Length: 165
Length: 165
DNA sequence: TTTGATTTGACAACGTGTTGTCATTATGTT
DNA sequence: AACATAATGACAACACGTTGTCAAATCAAA
Image 1 (tube, protein in one colour):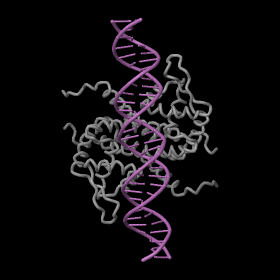
Image 2 (tube, protein in one colour):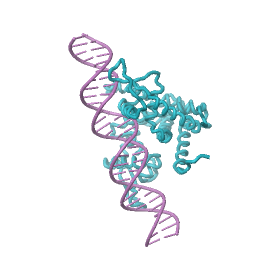
Image 3 (cartoon, each protein chain N blue to C red):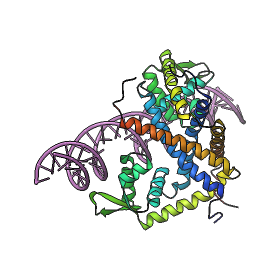
Image 4 (tube, rainbow over the protein chains, first blue to last red):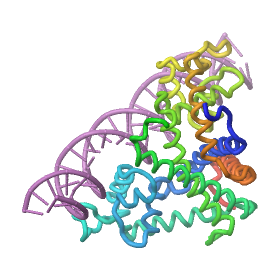
């Protein structure tokens, strides 16, 4: 047994993790409420954001990689958005199957309408918080995220490392 | 249009929120990997934790309220855990239907085994981070969570408040 | 060109959480 | 006691994400 007890940092990060779970749940709820009357959900909104922030049209798989989620989930939602005329597929000169995803004018209006709702919402939510503290929080969260990404990469790349030295 | 642009805090919190989403995803993944060989998942683990931390046996609905999620999801998972002999129901002297949930000896072993895996994992994950920064992060996350809970309560209690002054 | 590995989209099954409805049980009011 | 209200569990439908498999397309190597 290498470590039977948590270090001071380990204890603090454990508490932070539990709060992150709860905050995430609340954010999903609030996000769904915020854009539900636009016919959007948190998941759809996040995907529209990925499309909006990409410099050029990209494939579904590319967006999924960038977002750190699996292709299939993004594919399903983008297919739905396509049926509803919110996004559409452009033929890809470099790949016959991997079509490029772009927002339709209707999709762009929708995305801007969502932002118009998010701005006053987040302004009220964050009112009075110290920008320094927020930056510190973001830094900690980002570092934890990065470490987990690295650890995940290591585990994926060397699954044969089952023996111990 | 009350606020067309985000305040400084609004901008920072928006960035923080996006990172919280990504961190949450990574934590779910890491948590599932950590306890998968015990036959647990992140969701099951979290529910076992709620049971372990309650001072006395409580009903499913009570746990759901405490965790801030809906009864139905907790009910389904606890029913599964019951079938597998990980938790069991005690008759409730004060309520004929709302049985009390307790962990079986097998469930307690499972939960302790999960903690034994989490301790070295979180110690490595948090190594080198400043305890002060972690505390600041937790404080920010907790305040955002509390504000969202309050806002959610307000919206639930006064759904007739559709007009504006 | 041929072969094999990788990428991509399609499809299906499942775990998790949300939403809504229903019957049963407690609780509070009259 | 009788009634209305709330709480609780059961059930079903759906949204979202994960996991696995398959075929088509691309790319790299021989």
